[in-house]
Length: 117
Image 1 (cartoon, helix red, strand yellow):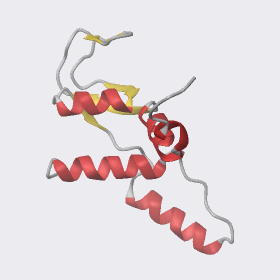
Image 2: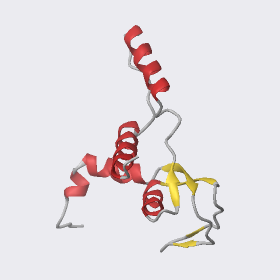
Image 3: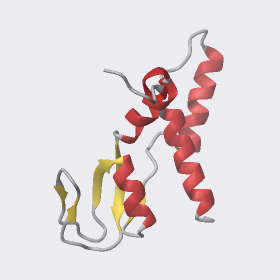
Image 4: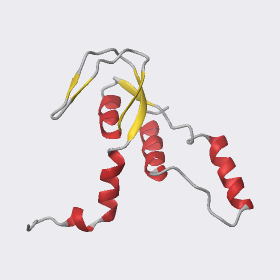
């Protein structure tokens, strides 16, 4: 198989970003709606105030449409991060962090900044 644009297959960052957007994130539904029809599947119904886990790429679309609000993960809080830094300074070993912690942190901060919270 010969691909004209082999960038995706050769670039690990692009592959990592693709995998990141397929992960689940918790959102809070802001408006009730029956169904969300996508190409390969349907989601819903959703009730206002409900917390649901959906893929990050869908959450971004719904957030941009003001249908939901992204909820920061529990580890993205000052106390949790300060504790990890403290433990890391005391130990010669690095602390375990959630998978895709960097990407999710950047996504969260970038989206909050753009919404002027």
